[in-house]
Image (tube, rainbow, N blue to C red):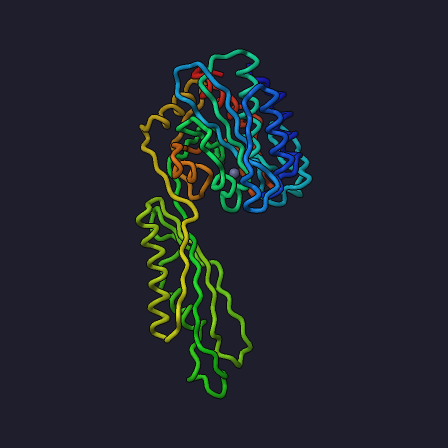
Length: 371
Ligand SMILES: [Zn+2]
């Protein structure tokens, strides 16, 4: 039933449309056109304008008549760099790039699979639930597309976000939330040779604060990292400013805020000790989510996997995706793997089998049958 050759062709065409984050215009237009050709109701938004993208989030609906509740299929059309001029090659059932770029299986394997699943359902007049689609922009580097998306016209209350590595069948039921951490430490400048006792070293205070922080692997579900430490002065000046940036993640929202408060407290104590001043900015980047293994949406996906002979595997992730935002905004969302491998590198690859299995799983979820 599934046309594997056509799926592969669609995927190879999609990856050759340049769509690095903020430059998704051509890819947005292409998927909107492909969905319209299938007779779906298609609409877009102007979310991209608010964060400097030329692309648009693309939404679509295929009204259904099965008693199953509507389901949203989600994927993103933007890619990381280097993602321009991708030359895909297929060898021994594995698709990779010629080597100077990523492949963009993240996340065009999902986009192609959803489009081909819809084609299959249409062509074969398969009974199906109401299927909704969102192809978002600017997922990479901050989830900006979905954060600015207008979800109000969608009717689905549950979603599968096809955007993870691992063979098809992995069901990601838990993802951490993330908070950003930024601080300025202000000391007092003085001549380092003539009168250093009149100065307050921002570097000394900042370093003492960071040294007292619990960082990296904090516990089994919490991580933290300081990644920016900026301060540069001539050696004869006591430095009066230091700038720090970092992040914390946890699957547990309470632990997440405790961790960022802890990081702030460490800097506060160090600043008190050295007489420096602290300004600190802590922001939520995205929120965590967690589903029980027997949650209805997990059960539904697991059943669909089993119907098509794929072993379902419950997993968790350390990264964020559009699912984090949609869960917070009221659409119950879990993440599914598409088989994309070595993502965000020039060695990125995916097997033709995983690409095909992703489409088969979509068809099974859309129709409640096999594929
Ligand atoms: Zn992705």
